[in-house]
Image (cartoon, rainbow, N blue to C red; front, side):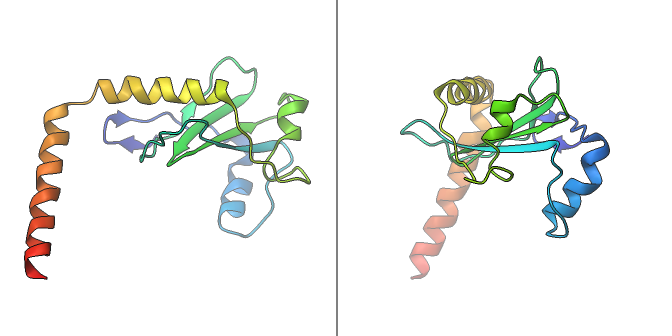
Length: 143
């Protein structure tokens, strides 16, 4: 279980593929055939400058996770029950090395981001911005 600034993040259950995925990420092996990675480009003009911890995508009938990273949405699907269409658009296994664009996926992620941003303690964010401004002021006065 990973920790995030907001508490405990979703546990990633990579099952029997975990060792092979680790090797792949370290450049020491190939991604297993029953692992599908889909990379989607953020479909909106405003790109949120943030990263989100992986989240389980429930109700798919197979293990599936997604996360957002500075204008890209990554989907990770594991298992034998991954639909053929999703396998076809895999950014790693497909011959075309697809990048996808999906308003449906974008709206799901945008809604999650909005919900989380609205639940943040604004006083902490404002304090952080003041601290950044103070550091910038010190740096610019030295130049």
